[in-house]
Image (cartoon, rainbow, N blue to C red; front, side):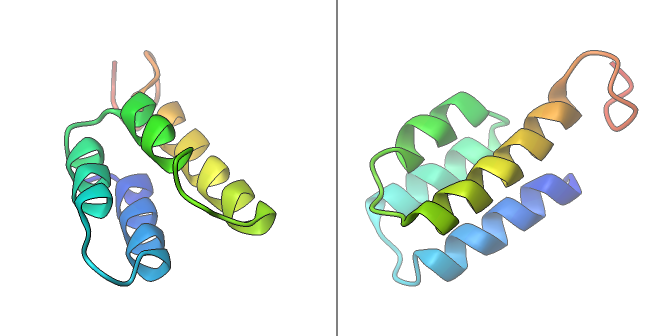
Length: 75
């Protein structure tokens, strides 16, 4: 699992302390390399501006690892 995945999962688990259907869907989307689905789900959550900026930064880092030619993926 990429470092960006781990950071995102840890952050979301801290923010969403209680297991819930949306948290489970977020975790599944992360496991399945689907940042678009994660963005869609996160948009439904009542994060404050700071939290939203943080998750956007984590998602951006993850998306960069998925980009063709990324040194992390070798694509």
